[in-house]
Image (cartoon, rainbow, N blue to C red; front, side, top):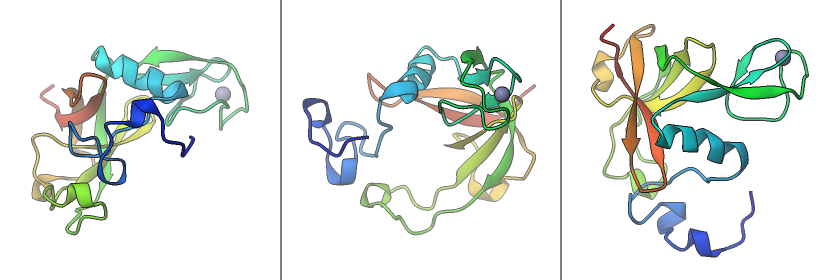
Length: 154
Ligand SMILES: [Zn+2]
């Protein structure tokens, strides 16, 4: 993660917010780029250890369970449950000033990994621990599709 200004960052506005989208976007570098490339194809993948088969997220080199360097991308079912959430009432980043109040959620996927995201169809007051959810894809810019969640209908 370099702090240097470069051509690809030219479209950034206030504190790194994308001017096209208005909110900060993930940096497309390394394994994060691979993760978001899958999202752009509307499929969710997580790294899975080739030794102990444990899934992990966010992307990293080493398995935290067994220490193996060996892994592959593996598809996710896209389903999980609400593990936790919080309601943001005061924006900590200027770009989110018009979004408050909103509720970032932590989704525990069936694969065991947890993903920080947001619900597209459930107001904060209707959230519950354990609520079944499934992934939806929000193409917020031509380059970036964010995985978000809705209540599971299954
Ligand atoms: Zn492992």
